[in-house]
Length: 317
Ligand SMILES: [Zn+2]
Image 1 (cartoon, rainbow, N blue to C red):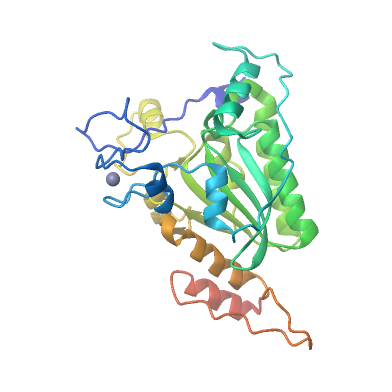
Image 2 (tube, rainbow, N blue to C red; image 1 turned 135 degrees about the horizontal axis):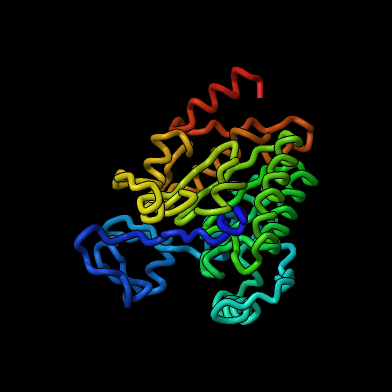
């Protein structure tokens, strides 16, 4: 009973306009919900889907996110042909199978996550990137399986594991099978940790429900995009349930940074460089000279992670 209730908790993922501003219903997807600037597709892609006027971060699909984060042409996908079954023959307003087909047509993806290997700043990683456009980035058995396969790749190749979360939580159409993915993905993170490999979790808007309650919150380093909602349930639900008056930034990346739940809030334009710098701190340099003398690791620029460098230096890591 209790597990079913968890699966059915609704997550408030609305964000954008300040109080008193018009609701974004009916808004063109290329129109900024905060300042109403409008962009052509190519302008938005070139700007990494960040509003040039006010800094609002538009949603990014999995494939575009991979292109933003990884070295060009380096991504190699695995398990692209995995598809969800419908073991519960679930029907809400429409059959689950119909929703799956529609999501695949809309996104070109087999499910709400894309996994594989790539290089970032020349360093190899295993990568798992979620796509909110596929059934609200919900985690069902295929998302859990693909996440686990990506973690396995990290362990097999001895490379860091990087995930980018964007999810409304567990996929209610798969009920307990979806909730089991929380345990499964946590075990995968554990396997990466047991192999003494770094796991970097990047949380984007929104990272909620069963995803923030499992792997997304378990990164050795947790990065978040500005303004992203990172909360088990949305502020409206929490306020209604507890009767408490919440702070205006409840659940947002900035408040989670203040509370110590994330390590840095990184604007999208700095995300790739930040990730590359972290990987440089954690992993040996990618190239070894022919005479066997390793090239010195590039000196990371001083910045938000100076503390980490010092810590690694002290521990001899
Ligand atoms: Zn704007």
